[in-house]
Length: 524
Ligand SMILES: [Zn+2]
Image (cartoon, rainbow, N blue to C red; front, side, top):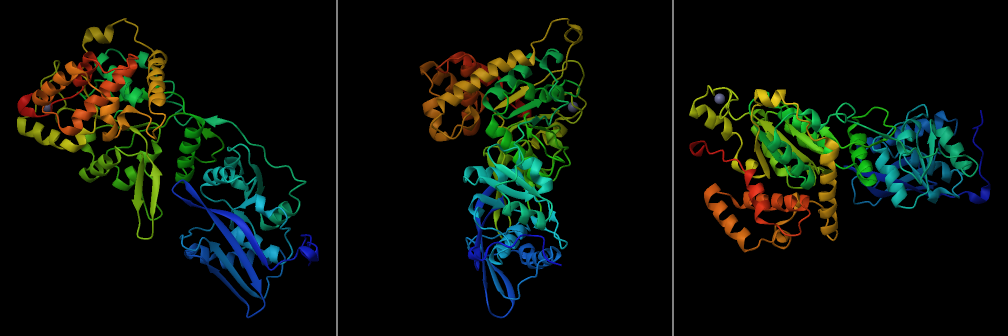
């Protein structure tokens, strides 16, 4: 039987073809040109350009898919080059572009518009096109590279269409892909969908007005939200630590369009959302259990996938019962608390995932939970308390700019008819304070006070004479380490921003100093 595809005119026939494709590392993409060269000689089919095993197996899939499409596979010497040659290529996403390249050299696919196409897809032996991972990143790459159209697996079309300004041409089989490319000028592409989804649908209705009392903790979380400061809540069971933490997303500003794409890319790669058909529009709130592994928290696996710190990108990572996490997990967390990106190293290469999260952690003050509580007596001895608190090593504790004691609520607070401030009202102040930071740091890549590098502390956290005297006194009396000293300055900067004050005043420093807890048990 003859192939159903139309044979292109003889004049267009070429023995060389170049197809645009694209590689993926983390959520980042890079250009890959797929060159196909066919010449007379001993029949052979080789792929060069640092392919991995999956790509080498591509030969068998491409050969079978072409045959299954009722096209004779050429008995010639076929060389496929994945350029650039010095970058390792992984995965089966290049099957479809390799097959299309071969079919161009056979004169079965029209190469006229090929330079405007980005082609990706895995082939099955029967010629079907299988879905691929990371479509959103690929569509984003096409847009940035001024490639107008995308030929991708049918199942990925919905996800690709989340990026506007790209013509999406989905295909279910190799035969369909051939027909689409040959008739590209007469086929209507899929329209971009500009819908968004909420990943925290049950959380987004949570409101601070439902949380009674806890004035100090609420204030700390408002400051945390305003300057992206990591925050530790220490208090007895039932003091509402989780309830407060869960409400932080409700006072954060909405995600920007770029942030939506970035967050969705991470969820796309992690396969955390089935049938991803809209951009994620709410800030993530992740609360992994304390039994989580290091790989689960920071990312890992043989083909590394993002961990919880990346799934919390641009949102909140909530770690309840912080002292119960394994020490090595806490160590890996500590290292990622100050950067916006995590590097997962493998023998062959390293993968970076974004992880710009704000950590809210909670723990009890002692094993029984009631050390220092005014309602219930602590049952622990000093040694037990020391061992328990000792799990929060100095370097980890220092990285929490805000540390708050959340006390048990008294009866009168629980029964109070006082109307608590709503998340909406708190968010107004947070958004204003964030705007001030975005304007102030517009020439830098870091937008928030918490991420101020040491070189910029002096400039942006300038203290007047009174402020310097106050801080010198605080260093002595509170035993502040260098890191906690700058933590206090950064928090004071955020407090000043909340008051729309250009300078850090003494009152801002005093408020910031309230949020340092001395965990040295002998001093309590
Ligand atoms: Zn106790």
